[in-house]
Length: 345
Ligand SMILES: Nc1ncnc2c1ncn2[C@@H]1O[C@H](COP(=O)(O)OP(=O)(O)OP(=O)(O)O)[C@@H](O)[C@H]1O
Ligand SMILES: *[C@@H]1O[C@H](CO)[C@@H](O)[C@H](O)[C@H]1NC(C)=O
Ligand SMILES: *[C@@H]1O[C@H](CO)[C@@H](O)[C@H](O)[C@H]1NC(C)=O
Ligand SMILES: [Mg+2]
Image (cartoon, rainbow, N blue to C red):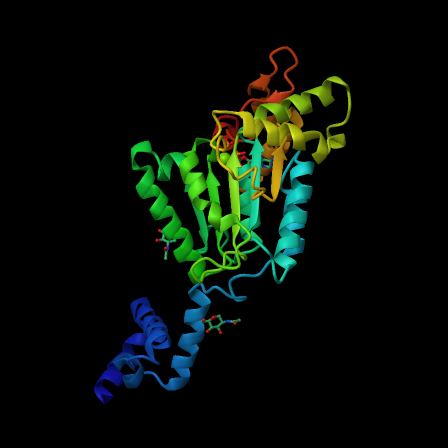
């Protein structure tokens, strides 16, 4: 044993590999010390180090409690007010909805948000900001689940196996962590039967087979209703009214009806809406030239460049805008900026 100690001591100050070994030992002993008392810890490391290892392990291993899960209301508000451009209605609804839900110790049902709007207006971006202000690890958290209709559930023929799989995933993950978040992207491309299969989890049940879903968060993303939202924004623009005058009530009715009535939307024929399972329909406005500039400047900063208005303007001018004559709204929103900008820098 002395030999091992001596050799170990000699090498540990020299090679980085030795340090990795030490760290690994510390980690492993922290993880296993209670269970099988590993050789590593009895031979080389005292119980003090094992305790340190346990701390380190919990520091690195995500758990479903306050160490990894901490809602930051101020952070969310700041992010939505400073990083999200041109979406005053969505920002306000989301701040209220998420803050209210997270501060409620005994919610009656899970939070269900449905985000709607034209492409590239910030729906995925907002989901990311919400996740970052709840989970320490943001979108990479083990408790945040992103499902994309075309990627996860592509074949209509397999709908029945998708249903059982999805239900099992939701049940399994919520029993591991009640504060789980499920994001469904391309909701308008999802099979109505599949949407109906998750309905029980969104409802006012105390528990289903011993699992309570009331702490969970469901976010649906889609372009459904996007055209109606554009129409409202365009009407305001043509009447020379400020975009900031647009209120939720100007968009709400048009939105829920259009989502409901559009046969091409995944919501068609599902009872999500008539059963009032969606708590908030959140409209995303189409973005204007000035928002493209804002996105472009932010993108330059995130790429590590000094923000240059001229560069961003020359990129923004080359993008497509609609309607054809008036060129008010960006066709692709801010979505193409990361790739486009490279050609102008
Ligand atoms: N309103 C916005 N404010 C700031 N950045 C934005 C905004 N909208 C989009 N972006 C930027 O553009 C990227 C793409 O947007 P995002 O993926 O959120 O669009 P989307 O609404 O989900 O579009 P789609 O309907 O096509 O999925 C984001 O990661 C973000 O960097
Ligand atoms: C979080 O959970 C882990 C394991 O369940 C526990 O060891 C740790 O002390 C907890 N942290 C807090 C802050 O409760
Ligand atoms: C949790 O969800 C993921 C998909 O995001 C899935 O792969 C995993 O099997 C689920 N876990 C459980 C315990 O059901
Ligand atoms: Mg998206």
